[in-house]
Image 1 (cartoon, rainbow, N blue to C red):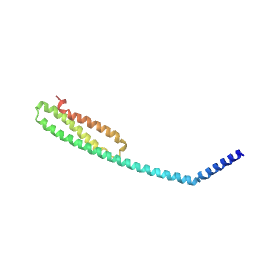
Image 2 (cartoon, rainbow, N blue to C red):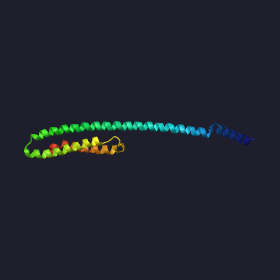
Image 3 (cartoon, helix red, strand yellow):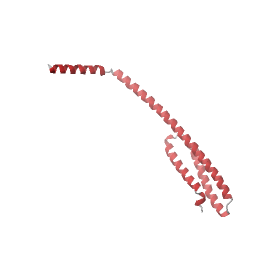
Length: 149
């Protein structure tokens, strides 16, 4: 008798679980489609936020780099005035070195202008290369008067 009661309770529990836990396949498909649509909307929103963040980052980088290049142009103009006051022997050598610095500055300016925001996949490599060139140029500008002597 004890076995029969246990079996009967087990059957009732299993039946109840199956009846309450089962959804029709149409309901399951609809739920899955709803979840998929929600996930796709979230992905699209995240992609839009990422695109906006990338555009903002590029604009900020471009602005800061342009300011640095303009500051370099001012320094180069000051160096030209200083060089004009030097002796003839030093003047020729320093004018050549300054012309190289001016050329580098112009190349960096052109690189920055040529970079297109559409090339986002190349952004990281461009930024790294450009920053490296800017740092190298800044060191050369800073060491201009000490390097040649």
